[in-house]
Length: 331
Image 1 (spheres, rainbow, N blue to C red):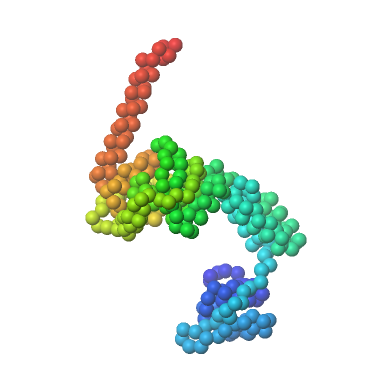
Image 2 (image 1 turned 60 degrees about the horizontal axis):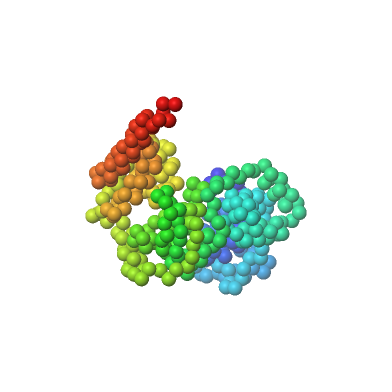
């Protein structure tokens, strides 16, 4: 924080209070955080105590300051910049009526407006008028996202009708995590059809219903979680690939690739291990990157991808020959 703008005392007192609500802090930690002396921090602690904040001091090497249990900070007065940041971030998730967050989106916007004083509210409206959000068209329906979040919280299975690139399928999944990448919403889940962990685009889920799960649910979970723990086992094939700068950006947006990307001066590299059964999945994902990726290893993956491209070229060549011999071609 060495070159940051100094914090005025009112903001610093609020910051110290928020920091202490997050857990015990020493005077030295607070001094470094707010770029002041320990003596200034001690004066600030005394000032908070004088206005009724119950601060507890614990002596010793592992001691520090904390807020007495049961005390909580009253609602904060937001500045125009803080309120603008919150409302603009919410606007990125969709408007009040179509947001994937459903009614919670609408109510939190109403509450934020309600706590703003008139002058701040006017400034926020002016700020937001000069900022524009271009939303993607892949936002999930609020009901589907809510059902997935409930399933994750309760650790229960769901039956989904999924419209994937290869067609529509019905499968039973155990959702584990929701994420956003490149403007799209994804759910990571244990897929009983593939007996593996898969990432699904939520906007492609046509319907979702609670399910008791497959008969061998416990063994599927045990198999998948153990294989995920051993994902980088030395007995598994090692995937190595070189990425262009654009390929690097695309890989960083990919939920299953981003953690394995190593950025370089010329672009990036991918290097990780995976079970043999996962190679076709990564092969399909790499083919989508086209010339933005060059796969170096393993040879099985290169062979699979070459065969897939050859099959596609054969298919396109047949279509071209068929078009030339078609009676329509002579008209």
